[in-house]
Length: 141
Image 1 (tube, rainbow, N blue to C red):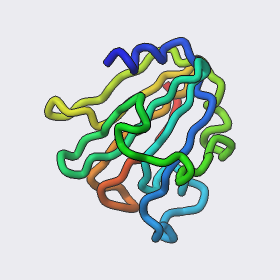
Image 2 (cartoon, rainbow, N blue to C red):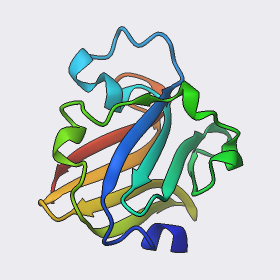
Image 3 (tube, rainbow, N blue to C red):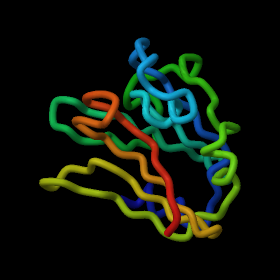
Image 4 (cartoon, rainbow, N blue to C red):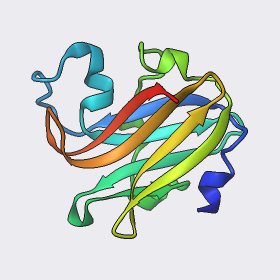
């Protein structure tokens, strides 16, 4: 996916999320922004963007650089860039990106950052907290 490889060397400057499920009280507050279902919109240092949205019908993740591809309205998205998770990841150089596949369909994207951290945005059919969810997770490389 060329639109993904074009992001290597850039920085994520902002993360927005469109929270789909309004009943998220069962998810701990400190991880709510990452674990609650919702489409994810990433902005990059060159002004480009990626929209990552779960596709329940085939258990995959739609990856697009065109917001119109999913008919999403950015006014519905909430800026989560300054939460505890993203505060160590915003404005860090992306050194490598992997698209994760299952049965030839993408289910996630893994970003490696120059500070030794990674970000995974994946579509999961079941998590500890929900079903059919697009989640954001991190960790060290």
